[in-house]
Length: 210
Image (cartoon, rainbow, N blue to C red):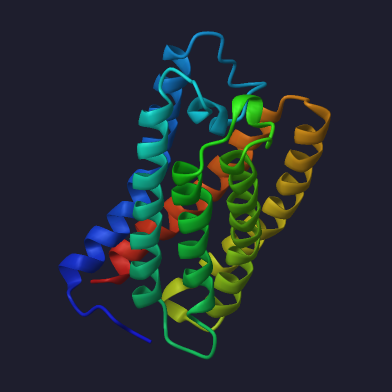
């Protein structure tokens, strides 16, 4: 179902998808550099906002803002692809990922070392897990929709490749998290792959709107 008619609004929503990747890289690099003892190779992004962290509040606020940005992009993407049976599912999963993984992480920061021993820490695990599932499934549903959309020729293949890559990266991330092996590095590769996919789709969306 198409909900937005204004081209200006749609362009703003597409810009949201364009800026989220560089914004994430810059913000988390700065917060990591300013946090004493923080190693981005071995510590997760969420640990920047853990209980007692120096910039926990700023991290939580940014998580919420970035989640809203992804949701706005998902609304624009829903308008920019051809309407067909189930075409809403991919954008909906994107919105769910932004809502659970990002906004949820902002509302429920992890406890010290993300141990999951407090209510907020346990909820952080829950929202992050739901977000990971949505993140993994979204490219496959977008691929299915774009297969029959001539305006997006070539992007369906790109979405399929990203989807397959994310499946493996999520697996590697889960193993690295359990084994405590370069979990920060693997997580960043995972999320920046996902946000790169959004970045590429957002640039295309910006032109499709015209």
